[in-house]
Image (cartoon, rainbow, N blue to C red; front, side):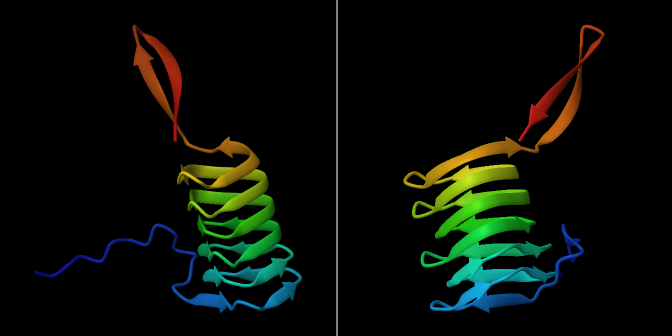
Length: 135
């Protein structure tokens, strides 16, 4: 009947979300604890411990560092996502990507180098320890 409050997987992130509307151009760096919904253009670096959503008309040129990202728009630069990067069918990514998990829908354009930062598990087989990487 009552639902337990599940712990926040990212306690540093604020529940607040900022919106950059279509037609808006921001030149410079942005730092925040909350999430972003970007429908306009940012030329600069964005750093947040929250989630970033880039809609179809959204564009970032620079570096983006965040916890999760969901792309429908365009990105050019270095993208560092601690957990999950989701690329929708309209997404266009160019540059360098470092992510924990990657989800790509058919139709997305992904012209980037990619490094996955999945968990490393130690397995024991016949008395020998082996490392297995999982994403």
